[in-house]
Image (cartoon, rainbow over all chains, first blue to last red):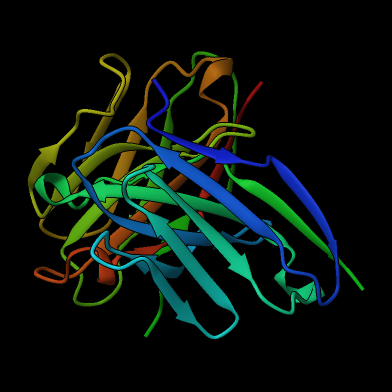
Length: 113
Length: 115
């Protein structure tokens, strides 16, 4: 049972474009939603995270939009750069077990120069 | 301050052999978590340990897999009698007590290949 569904599986944009990655969750107990960035041969690194009491969070060029009623959240990357090319994972966890991350399957983003 | 250190980076084992994966948490971190990443899949939680204690092993396969985090030394994920399906990247993360998810840091992983 996949509790966090992520799409698309891969995404190609031109430099300066705004890639959007979407995630949907099933477990209403989830209350913390981080996004991770992973480069080849490296571990995931926390990019940005949101809690369901806000609808949007922005850090630099990265924005999370959150729709609690639809149980969906998305990552937007403004003015994307070739250096943003990586695999992005959405994840979720709940206060009851706030150490156990449930990950989506990942989105391979390629930003062409 | 070194990050989470995992070794080896790459490990090749023949079917039936044992694999030992090591994880040294960041300084000051006493909580360790192991995740497995199968090809083209997201990471899946395996186990959560504190020093000398297994807190949650709900994601560990019931057979052949074990984990420990001794009082001294790194955390060890041990896979006995490996099979081809064990081929994956194994990631360790650590966190300090009381920081919750904000202190969660992953290592670079061990890529296990079973031939």
